[in-house]
Amino acid sequence: MSSSDLAPPDAARWAARAGLPLPADRHAAVAAVAHHIHSVVAVLRELDFGDTPPAPAYRVEQEKHDAAV
Image 1 (cartoon, rainbow, N blue to C red):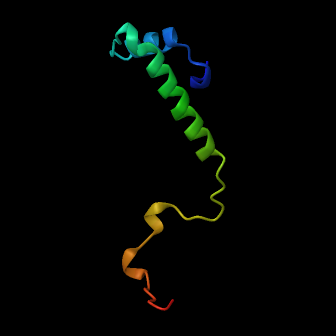
Image 2 (image 1 turned 30 degrees about the vertical axis):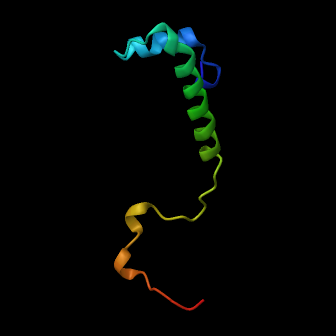
């Protein structure tokens, strides 16, 4: 089951398994937040980073600043 179809009782069950019991009035809110997070991550997974080097390859001291506009 993906978090996009997470029902409130399932959210409560998953939270309880993680040691975070939820009050009954929070089940729907937690399921909605899980759905939102899933939709944001899904968009990020679609991004094509192409030839973007990994973060450790970035060196601040090598950056040249150009004030020309």
